[in-house]
Image (tube, rainbow, N blue to C red; front, top):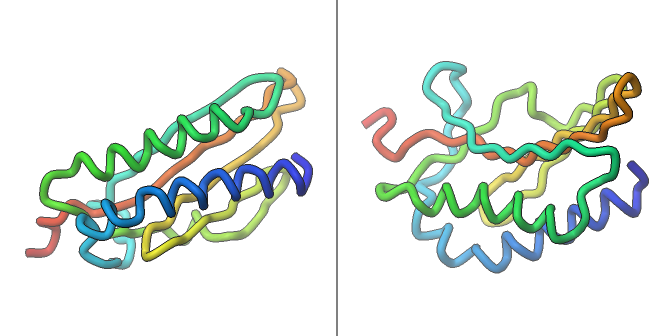
Length: 131
């Protein structure tokens, strides 16, 4: 993945987060530390010989955010330490954050089958967690 390809993915995600911001603000209760047991993950996965185009990235990010919006009682945002911005091996991980909502991307290229993979993820706790 080139820097310009990553920049385009970031721009798509940021634009969608801005579009969803007012609706997400109503649902998010804040942030809580990840505990490894009760946090839930919403994710979309892409795998192909080509990187996903702008349209596919939009579908993936919107799918994750729509699932968050569908949580009737709201949610607490969370993220495990392993999702931090620490590239390792051929894997790239990074996050886009806007108004307390963090969308994490995980990209890697598999040489053995010539496939590129992109995960779009968001970790959260249900609103009732800890109450």
